[in-house]
Amino acid sequence: MECCGNAAAADIRPAAYSDDDRKPECVAVDQAYNPTDCPYIVTDGTLHHCIPCDAGLHSDENDKQVRVVSWNLHNRSRRAAKGQGDLLRELAPNLMLLQEVNPGSSEVLAEAAGADWMVRAIDLRTPVPNDAPVRRCGVAIAGRGLRSCRSWLLGEIPQSERILLIETQTERTPFIAVSYHAPPGVTYGIVKPRQAVAFASWLSTQNVPLLFGADANTPLVDAFDFANTRTHWHTGYRRLQGEEGDDLLFGPGKVHDLDDALRRWLALHPDEMDRLRASHPSGPLAITHRTGRRKNSPGNPRRFDAVWASRHWVVRHIEHLYEKGIAAGSDHAPVVVDLDLTARSGKEEKT
Image 1 (tube, rainbow, N blue to C red):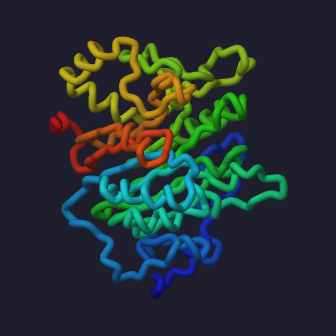
Image 2 (image 1 turned 180 degrees about the vertical axis):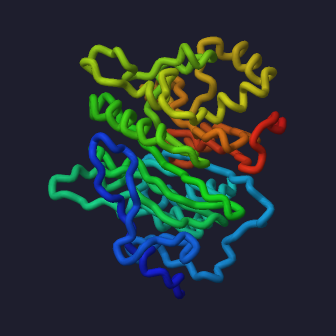
């Protein structure tokens, strides 16, 4: 199998940036990067297989709709990964924004899912001798039909393998997609909100079509009125000791322009919002995870998993498949979102 011939695509890494400049720059080590030269990103030559230029990855040139699945896979082994990949193939996403990806089973997952390519965050960071085993997992992004042009990490943050960014495109319109995994606050403490603040700061500098899928490990309160939503490490929380909190990314104090795809869809479907209010008056708006889940206890319902989208996207459809996710060996629901880059305003289609 021959690769596209742009040597620069083989080694693209984020340049270092200061604390005062949160926007990372991608640099191609070998030569200046030209996105028209090579539509694919190849990193280590093993998992990230070279994709031939004539692979026929492009979907209908008149189609700007993108199906996204965001899913925490729960670091499963090869056998379980095969079943998870089968579910992903059934869901037929163009983009798979994945968290807790086991490097030992990711190739099995990608093949079962029918992915044309996969990029893993762990292949874009330099491991250190005292790395904890959990740092050998990280997030990943896989695709079907879309082209992956470049990928990078957000540089100088403590858990860089938890935020992976790629540039891709649909019908020649480029956009950025991100897979985000928040460190659990119970384990990592203040690292969790610091990561959220760093990512929120970067998002606030962006003015291009952008989306991200996240296991946010928050909110604590998923209120119907977004102004009443409360994240775990919100600004003003005593353990922050005056630092800014994760509400800058996921709460009403957000500093970026992206919206929670479910809230955007519900705002234009008042009947569905009324049904949710009647059935779950205290929230959450959907169930994607249960904290404290035990053999004899279902645990506390949470909506920790979501897709967020910039104003360039219209939400056509959204699902939270908790039961299917559990059956496939995860402890999180896949979040399935159909997005349309063509329409800039107007009402989403009913589902």
